Image (cartoon, rainbow, N blue to C red; front, side, top):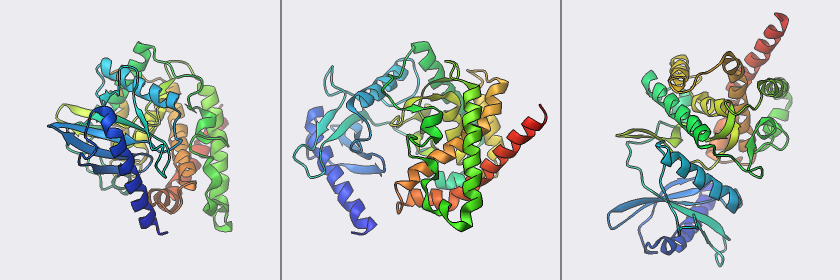
Length: 350
C-alpha cells in the first residue's frame, strides 16, 4: 500500500470514529466534518445549529485515560486563571472524553470535543520558519513570550502537579535511551560512514546536555507542568491575541523547554536573533530569567532538536520525518557542535 493509500485509509477510519463519538456529545452522527489535521491525532472541525467545534480522535495508545484526563484538567485550570487556551466540552460532569471503536477494525480510540476558536490562522509552520520565509515581527515573539510566561506562572499559582505516572520531559525523557519520543540517535543515516562525525558530535552533545541539566536542577521555579510542543502550528492568532492549542504532549519539564520549542525552527531565520531576544524579553515581563537560565538555554535548544530526531526515527517515509532527517539534521549538528565548543571554552576559563 502506498503512503497516500495508507493516509486515506487512516483518515477514513478516523472519520468513522469521529461520527461514532458525536452522539455522546449530543451532536448528530451525520454532522459534516472537515479534517484539519492528521498527524499524532486526527482533528476535525464541525458546526451544529450555529455552534462551532473541534473534535480530536486520539492516536491509539498514545496516552492512558488517566494521562488524557490530566491534560484536559490542566487546560481547564489554565482557562480558569485567564490564560487563552481551548475550552473543552465534557461528555458528562464526570467524563471528559468518550471511547469509541469497540466494533471498528481500527480498534478503541479516545475522542474529545472543544469549542472552535475563531482565528486568522496559526503562527506559521515549521517549514516556513526553518526556511526563513515566515513573516513575523519581533513584537509577535514578544507577545508569545508573554503568553508562555502566563502559562508557567499559572501552573505555579494554581499548584497544579503532574502525577508520578505521567511522562516527564526530564533529562532521560529528552535524550535518554528510553526518551519519550524515542532515543535520538536511532536514525539509520547517522550510522553510515559518511555521517560518523555527525553521530559523534550528537553523542557528545547528549553528554553535555545531561551534565548541564543535572547542574541546572529541578526547582519549582524552573521545572513543572509545561506545554512541551509549542511549535508555530500550535499558536493561533485571534482578534483577542495569541492562543495556545494542542496540549497533547503536556507533562512536567523545564519551563525553558517551551521557550526552546517556540524558537527552535526559527534559529536559521534571517531575523532569528531578533526573535530570540523578543521572546525572552516578553517572557520576562511576567517571569524573571536568571543567569543560569540563559546559560542552559543552548543545551535545551539542542535537546529539543534531538527529540525531533527520535520522533522521526519511528515515522520514516512521512513528510515531517523526512524533513527532520534530511533538512534539519545538518543544522542540529551545527548547534550541537557549538554547544560542545562553548562547554569546552567555559571549562578552560574556570
